[in-house]
Length: 143
Image (tube, rainbow, N blue to C red; front, side, top):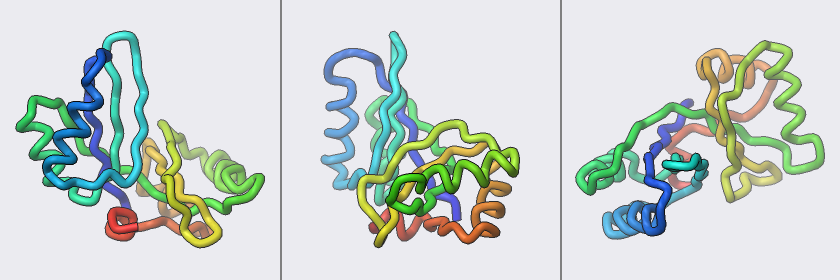
């Protein structure tokens, strides 16, 4: 039920992001969702793509430093308090969120949030026990 995410380390200078997206475009890899965080010297581009192994290969071949990370995609009610409904369950169960970002498309009446947990197995178990929908990678790659 985990999703593979690619993290790319980019220099914080003009053209770095364009270069990464060009490499993926030329390899016909579709970016499903992304997040970009930056510091003074570098940025971390986190991506969910339709072809993880292909993206990893072409990015490495083009000199990018790439890591694969397991994240969890969860459907969240798309209404005021929807995200909070998950937060209160996670805090009650003492589950730490390292970071999160939203998936652009909706799944029915729900939004999809990408979570990076320090203990993804426990998080998945708790979320399922509380009747939240954990979206499998295969579905997310093809959304």
